[in-house]
Every structure is written in C-alpha cells, then in structure tokens.
Image (tube, rainbow, N blue to C red; front, side, top):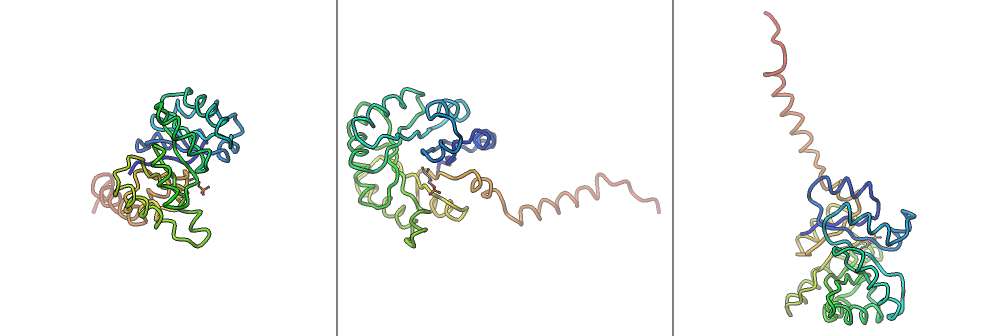
Length: 220
Ligand code: E4P
C-alpha cells in the first residue's frame, strides 16, 4: 500500500519525507487554511518537498468554475492530482478533463455506489473516508472492502485511497482490505513505528552489548 501524508504542514512533510517511505500527499481546503498560505503557493512548496502524487482540491462547486480551477491546479506541477468532491459537478468535471489527461482524486466518498461513479468518470483516485463513517457508527472499513470488490469485478483502474484514517489499526486494516493508498495524518504515521517490545528489545540488546564490549572490567 502506498503511504501518503494527509497534511499541508511543511515541517511534517519534511520529517515524513526524511524517513524514505512517503509516496505522496493529500490536502484539503481545511488543511490548507490551517497553514494560512494561499492554495497554489502552498502546493508548489509541497511539490518541492515530496516527490509523489500531491492532491490539491478545488474550492469551486459549479462544474464550469471547477474546470477552470482544475486546469490551473494541474499546471502547477506534473505531480499534482486535482481533487474534486463527489458531487454531480465534481463527477462531470472528472469525466470531461480525465479524457484530456488530467488526473483526478474524487473525494468525500461515503458509499460504494458513489465510488462506482468516480471509476466510470475515469478518476485516477477515489477517496472513501473511513473515520468519518466510524464517527456516525457505520463500519468505515466495510466501504473499502466493498469498493475493492466492485473495482475488481470490472477491472476499473481507479486507485482506492483509504482516507480519514485515525489510527495505526485503521492503516493495517486498510492494507488488509487491499486499498492501493492510505493517507495518514502525521501523528498516525509517527505512531505506526511504535511497539513497546521493539523499545524493550533494543534496550536489552544494547545493555548486553555494552556489558561485554564497553565496560571496563573491574579488577578482582
Ligand atoms: C483525505 O483526503 C482527507 O483530507 C482526510 O483524510 C480527512 O480526514 P479527517 O476525516 O480526519 O478530517
């Protein structure tokens, strides 16, 4: 599974990229607003840090305006993937511009039927939101499995990006379900490294080694 960071924060992206396992980035208007830098400028900065797909979301809601925004976002950098919401206008924009080679991430997907529409429109990525479904007491991971089945049935090439992942367990479950991509807040990526037995084991290895090779023997 490809691992993306779900952030527009440059420090988090630099740190994540330094670990050598980062495949891309997703942003949304809320994440961009948090950084206080205009969308296009922040996307350019992100493209300088991470070499991989970078999702940049339109803020227009009508197809004619979305199309203009999509052209201008796609021009920013070859790695930009234009993100549109799963609405009639978003699907219309995706269907029209995918044919011209612009890559789309269709976001805010909450049902398997919606995901079918994204694939039919030629989306490069669809983003089903796991955590936000869990929040309303629906099993978010079931949606990932259902979309994988549907896309497999028909050989759709659209990549399934498990979004709104809130914990290391979500990440492992998304990978088990076969999601092509998981996008993680920095905190979740950082937590993914942790295991108490790794810390305990390393501590013991180093103690054992130091006892023999680095401690001055006590004269007897
Ligand atoms: C995905 O592209 C979204 O930006 C993100 O995963 C949403 O996550 P949240 O539900 O934790 O805000």
